[in-house]
Length: 477
Ligand code: ADP
Ligand code: MG
Ligand code: ZN
Image (cartoon, rainbow, N blue to C red; front, side):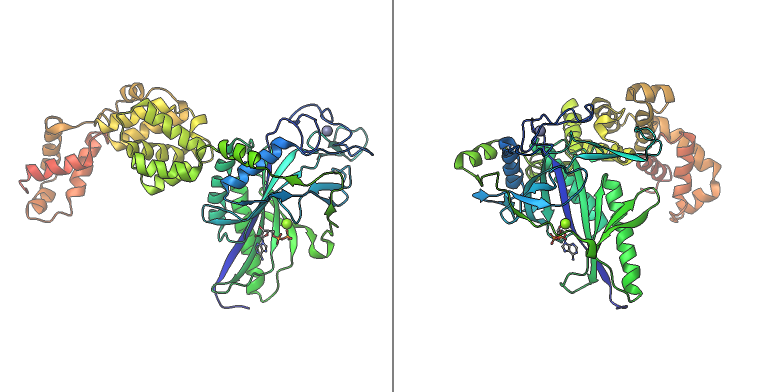
């Protein structure tokens, strides 16, 4: 099937650990970092005769998520058993939802949501290996603390089209969940985990191609790289006239390699059946009212507020609103200096974020107050853009006080006709030929003269001001 242009089709399944006080179906406190197997009970260990009880707080969080994603909330929702064997699953089944999930449909940003359901997390296997903690054995050990942690699984429609779009949309989702306060949404620690389903199809068709599933990627960067690698792998297969095999894959970010975990032939038949020990969840008006009352300002509203009340550009408004921490940092910069223009503050926050990569602005050495001071110094022409960027580099590297860095490094702006006129005059005098050409109306060499002045001022002059003075001295009007 060589020829026509191919487009990626991506659908996501996201597991979110909910930040409830206790586990999904028992009274054990959630365990993070405690000694192994200290947060367990007969229910989450799957001992015979133990009875689960659904966690009301998890259902409440599920409803909040559904409302934030504009989902349809089921009046009655049920739990099912999803049967499979694995050492991290003591009961031999996971309690999940099947045909009556808590939330159906919905939309976040430009992406439609298929469903959101509640389930319990598996325990954690630690593969100790030959040098592991169990003597004499090439071993794995299981920690049941995580087993039974409440999860919300969010499933999107297959509507995403690129790795970049996935990364951007996941940031919006993460910010939404974080703002709701329902999860720690920490990808490294596994409280937000994403599987990406990927297929290709000829542009202009709407039939779906055979998909593969990239499992459990634990950072935005790995997800984007994994998807890019898988799209290229499938493209090569299809362009060679062969067919993609439906399988579950693992992306190794270190080697950039993709390996198969299991193929369709080995796919599970989970034999879902209704959980006999749990009654259906009936959603009351009271539960809906409580969830609605708990909703904070969501990213879409924040984005709109930034545009309407702060007059931020749509790009800045979206950049911040989709990243709650960055937005909070931006708010702090504005609060540090209320006289600062919001868009100017936004531009400096964006400039800072560009230098930080994945690091969060608020966790960097650059305090909101120092960034506000830096921005104000530029507005007041105390330093020029180039100087300010040097100061910012210094702040990123070592923190400190912008005015102090300017003084210590001699970065004060050289400005005003008094200071610049003699330097411009000297530059013109040193380049008589260029000056003649300029006088004759050939403006090409003006950059050389401005460059000369910038050199003399060690880059501390304002280019536009220098250009104006050059024109004035040559009487070019
Ligand atoms: P499965 O039963 O294999 O889990 P689902 O139909 O439940 O598959 O879909 C799981 C996820 O995969 C959803 O996010 C969905 O949008 C996505 N998906 C389904 N089919 C495709 C496809 N052909 N290409 C890309 N994504 C897909
Ligand atoms: Mg799946
Ligand atoms: Zn328990």
